[in-house]
Image (cartoon, rainbow, N blue to C red; front, side, top):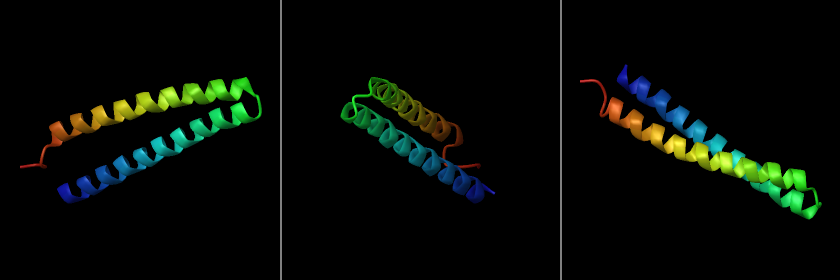
Length: 76
């Protein structure tokens, strides 16, 4: 059962990481397009998105450390 749990946890970790990267690219794109087309609202929302993505990435890292300390090397 531990192997299955490790596999599910690994897929969830990679899925969240992919979502963080996609969100960062979209937020940076909103900032860039807002600057190019002189649309301050898009730039502002993109900047807020970048800040949120940074906070989520920090939280993601902390949660990974907490999960690793709880599960350790698996059930004994």
